Image 1 (cartoon, helix red, strand yellow):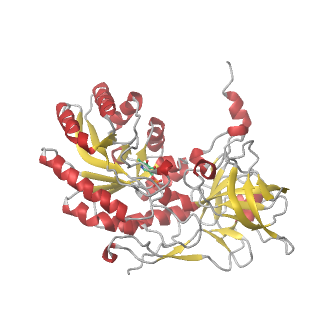
Image 2 (cartoon, rainbow, N blue to C red; image 1 turned 60 degrees about the vertical axis):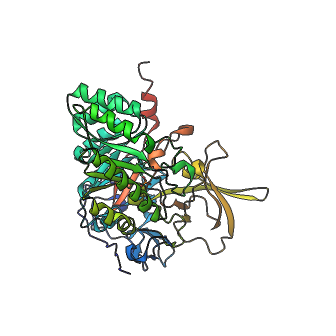
Image 3 (cartoon, protein in one colour; image 1 turned 120 degrees about the horizontal axis):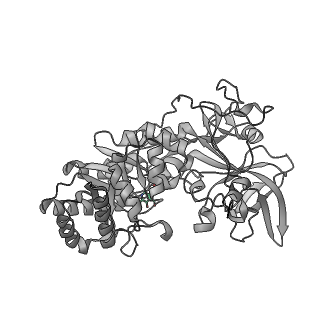
Length: 484
Ligand SMILES: Cc1ncc(COP(=O)(O)O)c(C=O)c1O
């Protein structure tokens, strides 16, 4: 098996913000500040899953350097920066902490996998919409996958080329479609009424809209039902038995729309790449049928997101190379440009939610660690029972008893948990505790429930800690009522 290395590359430094606490050196603008260096970096060997795909199309063992690693000194580091030290300089807790270098490494894995193919990597902005992260991904070469007009506005602000953006969704409104049409964004046709709305938008703008037909492939992605999108009964896309109706309708709107491709989306957290090949086989078959009707299709958009090792067990998961290798020959055989729509696999593992322990309590047989972070900042565990790895950021006291805890927040809901039945040393009040792999669908799904204001975000960039989003404040919240 070939070896795909995710290489650590030095990055040019973006503008660090000033240190809110002059006594704490960590958030300084000087990248040359020296931080305690980990004496050992965790290095996980990732092997390919037991996919049904033939060995010849599988990529191989990759040496995976996780950006958050526990060092021999017992402290958690992010790219050489001690998380405990970041906590001491941060504006408040909880906060999100990212590794910029890990985002680059994740993108590079796609770039390498796509060599030899015409392609667009459409980063799914819904996974994480931090403007600084978007600018970075755009700079690396990403296009964007959008699901609302505001995501398009943000993509434009981040400098994305709109002709490398794709507007998805089962309920796109005309106002947002007009914005997409003005900017030359690809639009996916999701239903009969969606087609009508796209045609209306094209007429309003006076421009022909490039469209892809979103076909529901009826492939079971074998994931949680909340993140499956390509089953027969899903709310997304058109059923293949309606294909010819749509082709005729599209022909009749030849002044307003141009059919340029076919799209499908299977679901998220996918851990078996043969599912992508099953879908690609179906899709090139549809593309053959559509081309036979005289349409000049150029794009095949195979949406469906790879899972990540949320459990931190070193589980063997497919990498971008495995995904692309399963569809490469099919794409080349039809001379297509491949569009992919990764969100989670680009951003999830680049970030931790950093919290402080408020206290420890016992009720009956149950022990709780209560932290200042909650379902408001990180809802995946409450929403679909998702597991995210949890650990303390500093060595515990020698006499700290190791017990099984539920890690919970202060929100007034029994569903407010970040992790259940976690074996951890009993932490001291104020100790730092991280929830790992919080880069995707955490901050972008955060709410202000219980009037918890959305937290600030930082990234480690070349050894410096830089704020990349301000925390939201109560004062901003009450402004919504000004003058009413
Ligand atoms: C249409 C579409 N594209 C892209 C994505 C991103 O998927 P993921 O974050 O799993 O890579 C999703 C997520 O569900 C989606 O629905």
